[in-house]
Length: 305
Image (cartoon, rainbow, N blue to C red; front, side):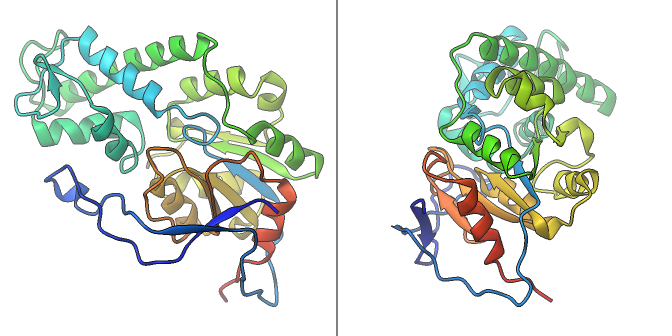
């Protein structure tokens, strides 16, 4: 059995870098210890793992620093300048590592991230609009243009061949398929960027062998809304209670549990201090995790009547 991290003490408040109400309840720190087993209550009708669902960014690849680079490249390319931002560099909008670590773990999808940011710090000037856009159509055009350029830049980074999948992911996918289970990927990112990532990182055979693939374009609401996971269960034709989700952040965890699915966490350096108390297991990575381990975890989850 792989080593699993379990939370044993109440979460402690995290020092927020932001004054906005959105960020007053951000990432929490907690003490954690590692054990090889966990005592769980077993219900009379235990769950059976029928579908294993992976998030993409942060789970299949540790990609958030690549997304941040692509956003900042887009801001530079279009000379984006916000009137009241504390996160500019030489007058140009530049999301710092510390800022983006918090932002990306609280707001799913690129367009919602930018929309929130511009609402908080003022709509920017740019080469797209000389003056800050004032109506909804122009604001939507600004965000669409930035996101499209950012996506193409991100594709260039992925195609460079320098990005590798996180440890254990490919083996777990292969083990799930070998066990006759369904396999899915659900990502809040744009479909084109996720397809590119999957084709380059898991290979064409695994990608085309997925039983379900959903991206942010496929649902109206982004994570932490559970829509994407509810939609996946319907497409797979299985009960949400028989799905197990692999996520890396609290925003993904909330989406999974909100859909009625159990979730395991494989955290990254930017999400390690988040409050994952709703997860059924927490791993630093998947290198020592076997599919049988995940199957046993789901069978031991108490089914609420």
